[in-house]
Image 1 (cartoon, rainbow, N blue to C red):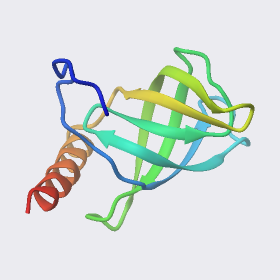
Image 2: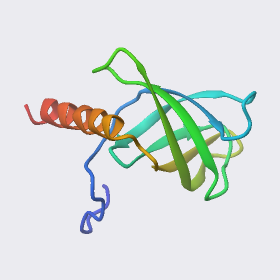
Image 3: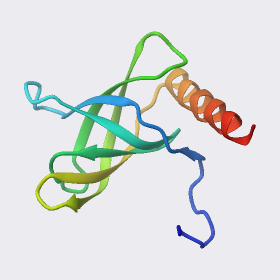
Image 4: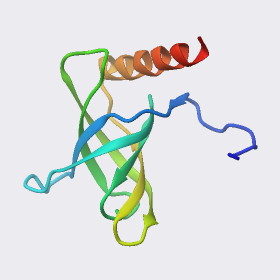
Length: 119
């Protein structure tokens, strides 16, 4: 069953699981590891082990299958909601300050996975 209304997102989103290392900006010694639930050129839904306040700035390092280097992304928490009480949270993050090259890599990744899905 999913959302039946009009899509409001500007960028298509793919449901994929990529490994992500993340931390709150300014807390260098508190890295955590997780995975994406979905990703687009503008943001991602990340499974986390804690709730984050909206507006918190997160630094993420992700490895995508189309490139050999890791991508460093900065994003702002849009929403963080509990899925399994006290254990699992779904955290929506909007990217900002993306370099043009990084934006192109994200777009290329999304497009590649969308094209695979259509075949």
